[in-house]
Length: 409
Image 1 (spheres, one colour):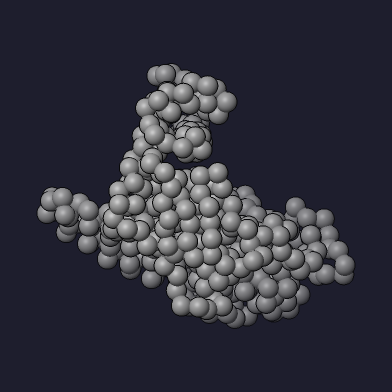
Image 2 (cartoon, rainbow, N blue to C red; image 1 turned 90 degrees about the vertical axis):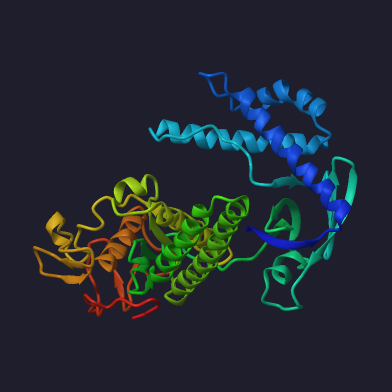
């Protein structure tokens, strides 16, 4: 199957070439914003690329010095952003028309050439050569795994400028052999929450304490800088935001890797998450940070799972927090508190998030029709399986109060 990976690389750029790249980025953003302006007439938003090409291509070529492929990429970025805004409007959410401010520019094989240790990039005045600042040789870095790996083909890149440096996010792809797994095999259920960012049906908890702690710390830093009101403070607020995002992405990558490991260790072929659509509205205590983190975590697990032949899907989360995973009885009083679950019918007690994780796995399992190749069908638990009737073949040893940052039971 085809696997795609993106590798960020810091660039070595001299002063003259830096000026050309800055001007190319400025004109690229101007082109994208111009397409947005043309697309919206006050009542209607045009998102057909063919129509916007006819209406904007010649004008953008006249008003900029961009390579023709940069003009097309700017239009495509504008269209993608407009479609995202339209989707929010259709859901009744408030959203303004997109405005491109963050410094970036798209590249493909028509306006760039990529090598193992450098690249040549088109600018508004010819091409420039930029060197890659690569880490020491190692078999465990994304650079060695994807960038310099002959099995992976470079498909394009996005140029970014942040914290005084240029970065090239190089996109790669490869056809890889993945293990054969039964389509309707074993499911690992994953529940997402504010206290525990993820809980699996195998009884593993990932605490959100680190995420919440650093969010509070960065909020304090931003608040202190905003009180200054100076340009220096404003620039540092943006820097703090980028640092925060980088830290959180590193944390979420680690959690995603461990969820994949959990699925493989227990012989799972599928991983089930709750549907993240309108998750902030469903979870009243949820902050914007958590909604972002949940979506990012799902994306990481989905693309990392591809290489292992794992299917990662979302299911309707309705009643997963109120349903007893043992007997199936569903009632709002079953969830005694944020952490505690106690079935009012059969008396089953456990951590509420763990119970929900099993129910999320069951939701996906009910959409499946059976096993193939003799593989067991069910939701994987810390010990044994659970079938679509909620039957637990072996005693379930996870109990209320067991809550660890990384605790496999």
